[in-house]
Image (tube, rainbow, N blue to C red; front, side):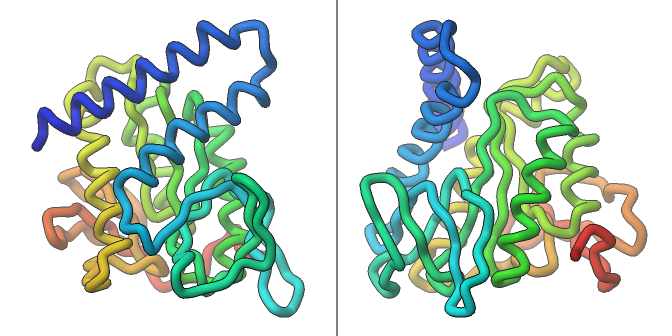
Amino acid sequence: MEEYYKRIQDKLLIQKKIIDALLKKQNTGVRSDYYEAIIRDLVRENVPKAFSVSRGIILNKEGQNSEECDLILYESSSFDTWFQSGEIVVVTPEAVRAVIEVKRTLNHRNIDDSITNLEHVDNLRRGIFKFIVGFTTATQYDALVHQCIQSKIVNSMFVFNTHKASDDKIIDSEMERFMGIIKQITSSVLNVAFDAEASFIHQVEKPIDITRSELIVEDGFHVTKFDNEPNVNRS
């Protein structure tokens, strides 16, 4: 299966290059819609029919809402939506299994932006998985992982291409990890080994230097447990 997922990863990067070539005169906002569509279609193809994937906003019964989320993975067979039109949706927190932030090029600055958006999601319901996906990065992989773990908000980060030769090996298996986690959290059995409220799932095989965090292996995934102190960024 490793070769299969590598081919999917290569296909995704080719799709991204096609968009860049076709829309090179368009602004970043326009191209971002197409990058999100690539990831949306990928997720849709790999989750049960009970789930849907759309851009949108999460809104609770008290009127509190998230910022606009690039992709919301929600259980459409069991929960009604507040609103739906085309690819846009407004859903309740209880319906949402995961939120995915999509970036063309991952760096520390836009990860900070994503963390801010995902904090709003976390305030609505902490059991929602929160992921950041990037097509490429010029930043050291471990440094991005470290930043996400420190947030105590992000449950995993994925990037499918790197300009750092030292990260080539780990990046090569990112698609397999991404698909593995998506399939775990949408399993009908709901036998999820990791906790959206308390863990970061990644590939690093040694502990990240975060105070009182620990690295364990659960169902083949490397998991760093968040400590019990409150997130310093939480409002």
